[in-house]
Image (cartoon, rainbow, N blue to C red; front, side, top):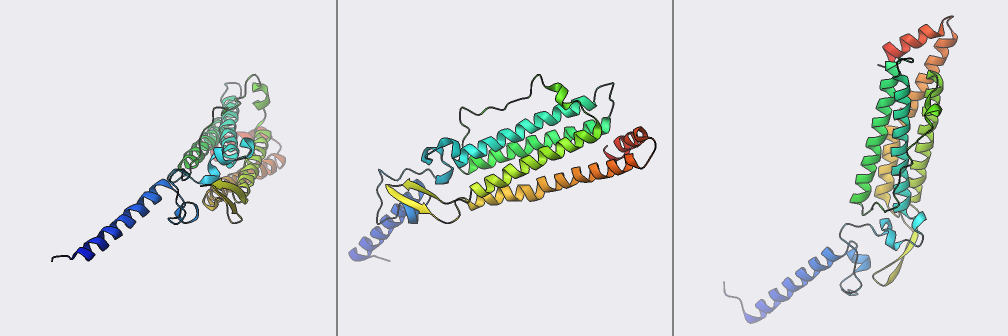
Length: 248
């Protein structure tokens, strides 16, 4: 079919508009709000593809209070708790203690916290987060005696550690939904809606699926072992049975 000159011009114009729209979409994350065709300015449209603007530390007025900084702190806390659980597991694996059940249980908690920290790191990077040069995990050193404790106090300490971590996770989830004012594409955008609902959902899902069940599990162990030790004349025998038949 032979096209007329006017039809050729019309098709060329449509193709130009489509390519222009694709170009805008590739350069900006939020095309309609930040870099619309009507207000498009290539020199001011600098947001990277897929990068959520409020996750970017460069757009935060205070680096320490940025969403990226708070996320990095939570990642560090996960890794730090993993090392603390590792020290507790090592204590119960000593020949003079010989509690293989408690050793394996705390070793599992250590691996669990490590994996959760790595998963959080990976997810934050997919949302545009980054690891800053001040990322540093305070690995416990010279404090090994603090983790040499009896079985029931060790479980209680672990529960306190999990409660603190859960509280910090929920605080960050709330932090992720606060409204902010940022400058994007030479415009001041006040976001009074969810700041990063997807990231908040991720944190809440992690608390619901991982941290709450772990706290419940620790509470059950503490209550069961405490009642059993009080109800018999030989608590050492109860600890032996619990260590070998319940925790392993």
